[in-house]
Image (cartoon, rainbow, N blue to C red; front, side, top):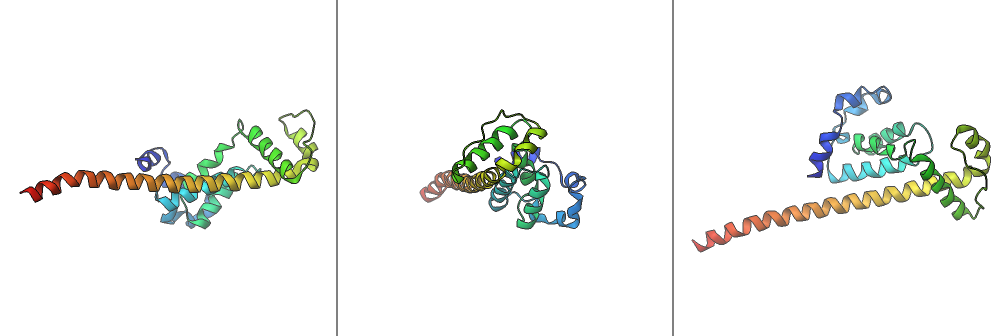
Amino acid sequence: MPKNFIKKYMPDHTTIREHKHLKIFGKLLHNGNLWHFNRRSVSGAFAVGLFCAFIPLPSQMIFAAACAILLQVNLPISVSLVWITNPVTMPPIFYGSYKLGAFILGYELLETDYQMNVEWFSSQIEHIWQPFLLGCFIAGTISALIAYTTIRLLWRLHIIQHIKARQARRTPKRKAKKAD
């Protein structure tokens, strides 16, 4: 079952409660809804985590934790999903977000030699900030909606399969009782 698989690899409550960056949330981390694995909590956590992954700030995990606490969805999943945008994947994801924003706003793409460093980014930010932020917002929203819908759908299909399998196991027993 996916629930057991996820629980197996998630850190325990005390580790997360004592994490140096999450201590600012204090007693809010004691809410039981933040640790549950149900359809609402997990699908909401995927939406929060993926939306926050597209926030172009270094404190994505804190934003994800704050949103998870506010919306009362699974905190560990929300916080861990922001690592989709890690130092390796961040440049192509954010460049794609910039291209999306530029396309929507009708801007010409900036034709410069792209360099993956802070100096290049800070020198170009005045030219790219509007399409970049719009693209990040749209990509984050779309990925959050797709993840939320997909998780809800997959969870529902899993439950339907489980109910059908249970009914199939019980049907031969009922027929045997009627035959007696």
